[in-house]
Image (cartoon, rainbow, N blue to C red; front, side, top):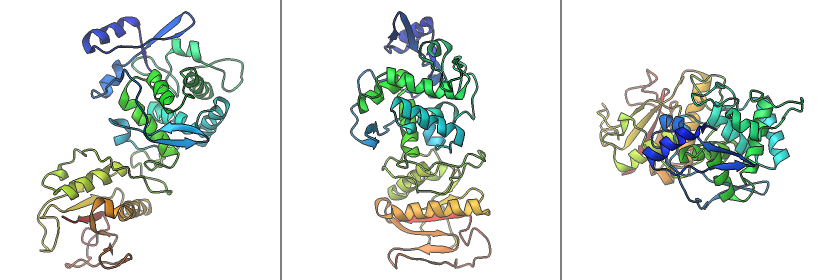
Length: 358
């Protein structure tokens, strides 16, 4: 949550022609800050009307609207695992204020990755849930019952966020959730990131990754990521020259598995039957493929593609010296490259190959 002084808000009004709403608590009025969000996400937009939620997730009778577009952070950073102590606080605060803990976790992920990046922002926001001191003075609560409210205390921060959402009418249905998140941060992309993360923690969107090794950020075991048909451009050079089915497949796999950073698309191959020269195949390079974690991640990718083969027009998949070709049968069979399996590339141990129908 970020707030600007009135002068900065006027600057935004002059240059962006965006109406900035004011939320009042008694005689206190505070205006949401958007400058830092604009800096981080220049494509952020601001809606001045209530967005009608067409799809909701029921969590204990609470209707949580589905994310929309645009998204920003969640396209590059999947939901991370939550430290047990922090999750207990999300659950406790959610129970007290009757809001889904997953929604609080979505905010915590978007703001500080559950405290992993818990630094004072350039706008002055502080604590795990990123409150401005003035806002915390108005809405902060004593979450751990130690007799004081501390903006830097994780319990106080999380319980205060739940309190603020309720004060912003989050419990008035899906439209209320949207309005409350708009009060928290006016960026549409921020709101969509939070909702995407919340659905992820509910097991209905992307995978939750194991954050113990952020450099690799490979998913922990669990359910495969969801598939909603939204496959934004990957901005990878591998997109060039691909036929439409392969292009969409590349984008969809990349959206579901953000840890994949290297892909191969159209190009020459020594085997005449290859689909790469036709622009109908993509190789998804697997991070740390030669470790047990990397191999398991590759199988997650392969089985996700297998599960959505019809929607993605998949012809066949090769991974880890195994091939799945639904035109033959539904089993993974041993695979041997025509030039032999003498190295991990030929054996497809370092990348998942996906061929697509024209």
